Image (cartoon, rainbow, N blue to C red; front, side, top):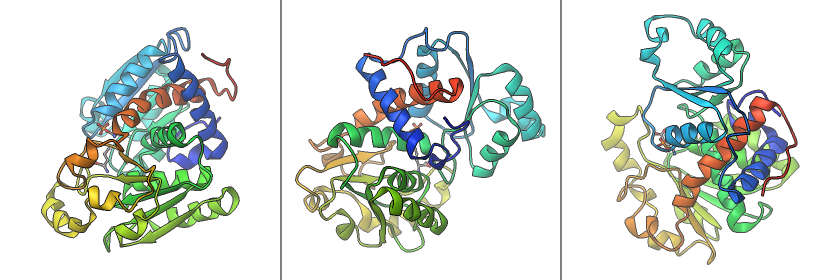
Length: 313
Ligand code: CP
Ligand code: NVA
């Protein structure tokens, strides 16, 4: 098993599949038990707001038998100029793992460079790998696997989209991204995923027309138009993204079995209508629930370094 989860690429195809297998086991027994990692301690640093990630991680950590310690950077000496490197060295002496949500991806990478414990990226401006694990778990539950699957991503080619692109490369499904001009996903992430698709199957399609991306898709995914830290751009983005709302008319172009996914929080009426969020194709609540199981599986595998475990359930 990998040491860290910095981007989804940290796990590779094999690591992602191990997380998915253990998470599915954990779900069958309604979560791993407090005998799993008794006495462990996991720090959580949140520099941005969170409902799902914070609560699911704290609950998952407690459920594994460990103590969650949630902190904001400005409560740490980090906020007064102590270096990331020194913080990483010190926290490694107290904790079993450290989960961090922050702005620059480079901060997470720097923590990992100096820490001797697993570092987990709980969202940066560029990646949201924990979200992608729950997303692919939800796809697997619905469709039984990934071969031949077509997923459409409609909206901002940002952190959530980047992690889904990496997921497609490792699991071999097709991700069709449609984003407004100027909001396409980063080319380097797309190229690396395309190289993985040559080995694993699937592909990454890029375009600007949501209707083309959604046509025949098995799942339609969207995210907010203005991410955390982009609040000032909200109005400008609302204008640019106006044609990228997932509504019933768009969903009718998808495959008859298509489901709707969203990382949440949703801005209802912007990127998605109430009708789709609350409609029969929506799997957003299962997707949010799956955060808990994938996080338990991930922490267990990263902290123990194991590749096998006793089957649960
Ligand atoms: N999807 C997600 O990460 O939600 P939170 O911002 O509430 O953690
Ligand atoms: N792209 C969103 C995801 C929230 C979970 C953001 O970064 O705010």
